[in-house]
Amino acid sequence: MKVIENIPIKLDSDDLVKGLRIRRNVEYIKDKLDSLIEAITPVMNPKALYSISFVDKIEGDQVTIGDTVFTSKVVRMNLE
Image (cartoon, rainbow, N blue to C red):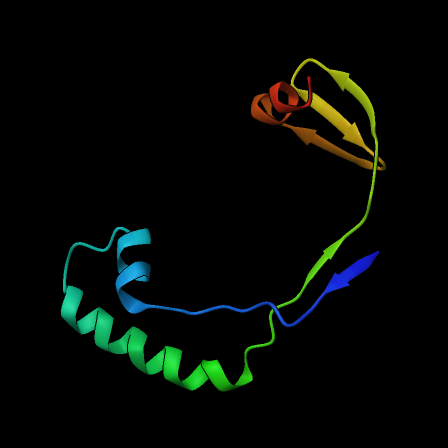
């Protein structure tokens, strides 16, 4: 498995409120999110893992990749 490190990330309370579809107490929640973002930014260390795999089987809405079975019409359609 390969590891990707040092992934740049910038958290923004406006984007979070919009992405989470928060409609009530928006200013209060943005203030709280800003405080949380300020607290966690110095210790964030995002990483990602990946490995190259091949599709073993596509059957109905199930796709088998390695030892993992995904049940998704969208995944199946994207792999055809």
